[in-house]
Amino acid sequence: VIFGNIANISTDGLPKPLFYMAGIITWNYFSTALTSTSNSLAGNAGIFGKVYFPRIMIPLATIISSLVRYFIQLILFIGFMGYFLINNPKSIEIQFQLLWLLPVFIIIMGLQGLGFGLLFSALTAKYRDIRFLIGFGVRLLMYASPVIFPLSIVSEKYKWIILGNPMSAIIESFRYVFFGMGVLDFKYLGYSFLIALSIFFLGYIFFNKVEQKFIDYA
Image (cartoon, rainbow, N blue to C red; front, side, top):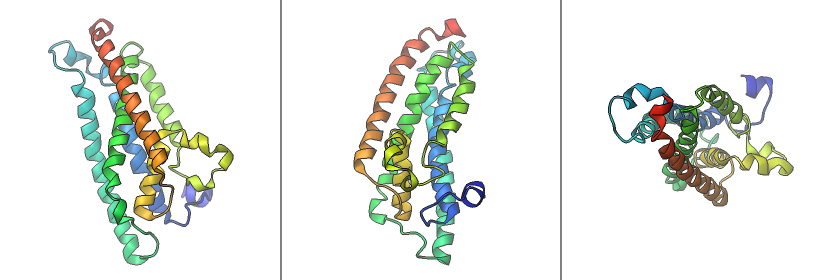
């Protein structure tokens, strides 16, 4: 209602509910994985002080639980797609030959969420108030991603800024696979994967360093 009707933001001719659902469920998996993982050390201080186990298991468990939630949302999304296909078969064009990319999207989103979450978890272990900024920052970043607008309406002069966000390629590619509209460029997907992998390894290194001293902070 707000973005499609009041703000009148283009959806490239796609049904508005489907356009926004595609962006939101994709962003939600990443944001939930990030925000939940970022509190994995500080939020489980009581358990860590009583028994030893690999601390990385907590963030990994968070990613898996977020994945279950993502699949539930994906099933609802597919249900809405079915409704629109029955009522207007020409409204969307599923790229069946590209459905194999869905697990790739999930892996990249999971690595990004886990990597950033591990980095912030290392920070919130010592500076607890940062977790409030993380939630605000993630919500703000959503508006700088093609969640509520298509990449096609962005000026070529500023498009590189939006594509600098590694989630942008995932969201646009997801829409292309399911709707036949959007931008699918393996160059940008490769960039997103490299960023995700780099952030994950960097986050894992910082997480391991901090978790050895975490009890001193708790």
